[in-house]
Image (cartoon, rainbow, N blue to C red):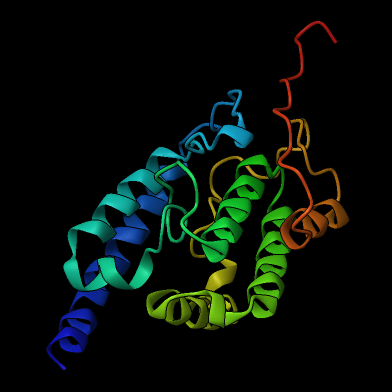
Length: 193
């Protein structure tokens, strides 16, 4: 009961911070396209505003336990090998977000994540994993997931940016096919072409 009260009281503060970060990200630039070796579990780069939001959420104890899971569930990521199959799905989701060159790719990744999480056998997860699985399905089924967590003010659409996922089917296959390998880093377009 006390935890719920603290969460409810912190919502206006979190909302104000989200709005402030949204405005501050309007002036942000495209995230740097660096070579990420996904097969070696490198940390996936995130926007500076996402880092601030992650630190803010981690600073509130009652929220921290609700919005983060494993190494990749929640805003941002720690890098390293996923703790279980649910965390691995979040990692794939983060990869698609980082590779996305338009907002539609992120929405497709969300839909593919919901399908993959829904198909995931909950008995392979521990208690915390099962609870976070349910929260994931609820969150991505809500209208707020269409905006929250997506850096829509950070230069999207970016059709000139190369991507490892050129179409929605490649995103869906990557997210839902366990045999699908991680994409190789895409080299930036050269200035001479």
